[in-house]
Image 1 (cartoon, rainbow, N blue to C red):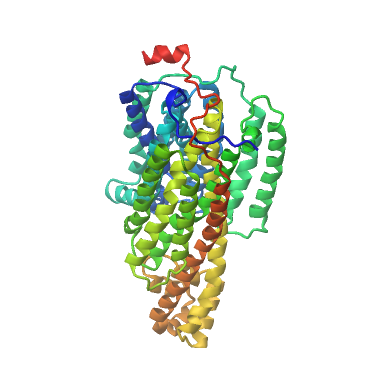
Image 2: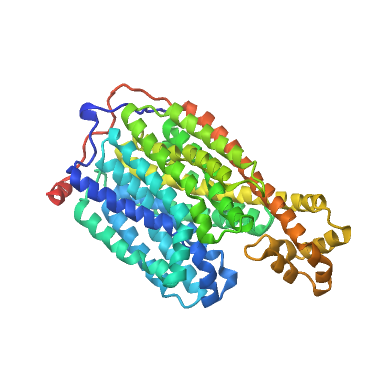
Length: 557
């Protein structure tokens, strides 16, 4: 396994593949950052708008598909866009992605039925799949190796910002000017991005080879990932052994094996398997895959705890997540600067992953009566650990592969992070459900409820109503009574305050249990990063000469 080192670059080797004036580079940077913000924001901004959308459009059975459709198309298309951008250049692919994203946004805002919204969300995701990986590749193209860390850190901050502010922005727009504008707001901003990139980023090709698309590989890749991702998504409402979960995942893995066999023989593979012989690339994608378990668990389960147990609205819970965001932004920017200045990253990442594990270990102490300032402190520590994974791994990958593979390598890093989050949420969701089922009876017993009341609740929860009602948001006592058979309500009503307190404690313990998974995966990732080999030597950089073809020169002029 090869292991290109990340040096502290200087001299002739420390030159970007595409040379542009500094003001032009800054305009390009700003535009692609806004594009990334839009794409990442749309993963979360819809959450708070969706209840109102369901009220207006109906189709409650398609509720989860408003998220799943976006996830499927954005995740699957990312590696494909990365490969295409290596073959045909970054600008046309990025502009295509922004254009498709805006078309999907218009269609989503104009939707009159739920199936139309789901289809439009799929189109949005198809465009968004180009934004984050191609943006990272553009940074690698226009900035020298020693500069990339400073700006990759900003992208990590933007991604974290969009993840945590999305619910608050969605709620604000929905409550003021209406849910269609959650989508329509993308149009003017997207047009600015489109115009700025088209005007300032030249058309260039970093590979002199004649473009050749692996259509069979693309079809197999898509055919493998669709059932795997749908199966993982279905895990929230079904067991691993059911056909809609385990069956779909098994089918996807079988197709994935065929895809790997095909790619090993393809002339221009969608995912060059040779990249996995590169130690830096393999360690990076494995580490971000594992590290995403903890981050996504915190982003998904903490807002729910803040709403169910803390009584916060969706908008307020988004604001209460700001300590996690603050730690993430600070450490992402700082770690990028440190690596850019020193060329050292192994022990920085080791420490960051240990810090993430420590923050998650603190969050496992979450209880119903834990003061918010303490929770915010735990969030901040977790964010400090997470930040460098967004900023440093892209830099390591881009500086360890050949120029002609920067796009596909960057997109695969994003892909493994996204899939890691999906797998992690499926596992932590199982942990949460099993922990809640175990803790509810124990909490009820500790609350001193009479046996007949506990039995009545058990019968209601067994029908899937009682427990589901009280773990929702709003007036949980009223929701619980409404979900129980009328004959049981007089028996249960006097004990509602004690029941709600007991369920809150059980919910807190179940939420705390989800972070244990992230502790384990972050510790494993911290061991993996010690396999990096780094050097401060300004050694030759293979295939790092500036590359600008005649088309680029004329465009730049």
